[in-house]
Amino acid sequence: MYYWSEDDCNINLEEELTSMNNVSELYIGIAFFSSEGLRILKNIAKKNKLKKENVHIYMSDEFSQNKPHELLEEVCKIAKVKIFFHRMFHAKVYLLKGDTTKLIYGSSNFTAGGFYKNIEFDSIQEIGKKNLNEIEDFFKYCELHSTTVTDDVIQHYKEMYNEIKELKKIQEKLRKKIKGYHKNKVQMSDIHNDVYPIIERKGLLSSIIQFMGYRHKKK
Image (cartoon, rainbow, N blue to C red; front, side):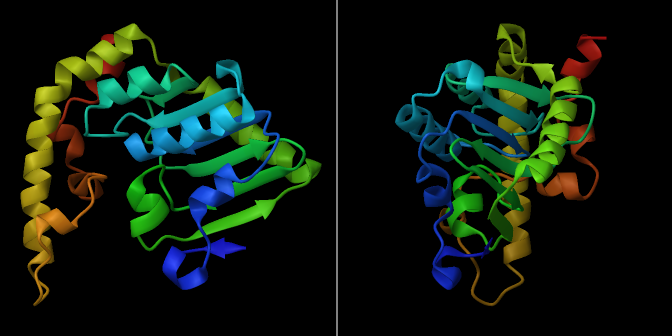
C-alpha cells in the first residue's frame, strides 16, 4: 500500500501508526521532527503502554527550528533519543513491532507537513522475519553512529536558539520570494510551521547555522 496524499488516496498516515494494537517496540528514524510528531508519539506510547526503553528515535541534527531544546526535553521523557552529528541523516522510517510488524518508509517526516499537508510518497506494509532482520540492521547502524541526547545536548540547542530563530527568518523571506513566482502568491500564513531548511538544499546551511558546533565540541 502506498500513501502520497490523504485527500487523493484515502489513507490517513497517522491512523496507520496509531491503529496498530499491542505494539511492543517502536523504532523511528527521521530527518525532521515537530510538536505534531510528538503528539502522535505520545498517543502511540499511551495506547500501547510503551516503556521509554522500548521507544527508539533517531534524528538529524537539524531536526527542528521551532524550539528544538524544548522538543528534546519532551520527547526524552517517553523515548530513547539519539542524534546524528557526524553524518547527514535523511531517513524517514517507522517500524512498529507487535502481534504483526508494520513498516512505513518514504518521504514523510514526523511533522504536520509530512503527515497531512505535503505531497509525499510512502510505502506501508507488513513485513516478515527475513525483511525485519534487514530493517533491524539499519537501526543497529543508527544506534552505533549517533549520539545519545543528554542534558548537555539539550543545553547546546538552547544556547543556539537565537541563531536558529535568525536563520528561520532568512528562510521565511527566501521561501516567500520563491512562492512569489506563482501568479497567486502564497501568503506566509498559509505555509505550515514545519521548517525544512531551504538553504540546506543549496549546501550552505553549515556556513550559516552552528548545528555542527556540538560535534566539534565533543571531539
